[in-house]
Length: 216
Image 1 (cartoon, rainbow, N blue to C red):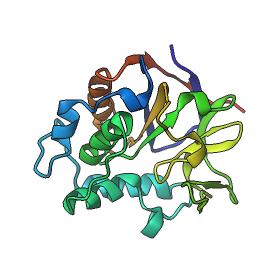
Image 2: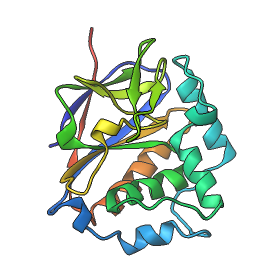
Image 3: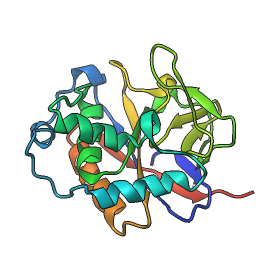
Image 4: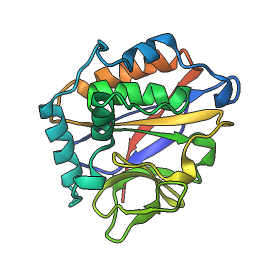
């Protein structure tokens, strides 16, 4: 069994989560052929995005007061634009698998190095003034009102940009995936998570994650 995450009540948020543990360092794992196929320009997939999906995801992010536009738009929208321009990023087997599912489902997905997380995990809307570094150059995003996965040090994964401090690297041995779904798209979170698990099973051993209702 993977970690437990305390999820704060939210009228729209629907989370999919699981852990993948690798038998060797991530850098040594090849990208599965069906993941590569899913990243091709005219690829078919068991789930597909749409303008409706993108609109509902933005509504999810707006609920806490966050403005999902410009450089703060949902991560899946960046992937969609890059795919349309045949400029899709290739990072490593775990991130490429994550991105393939996010691209086709239209749902943002966070992927964090499990061993870099510190302390108890929670999911909820960030308080005003919450910020974090999201890239190697030290750029900071204001996450006020944004739904986030947090540990003892603050935000780790979000539907916009994951924190730099918990991103995967060559030596990563276990990852936690968070599918940021919305109840306004019935069945989509479950379908995207099931496909994601199917692809990820080619990379390593899967573990379930307990999503517990936060109290207090």
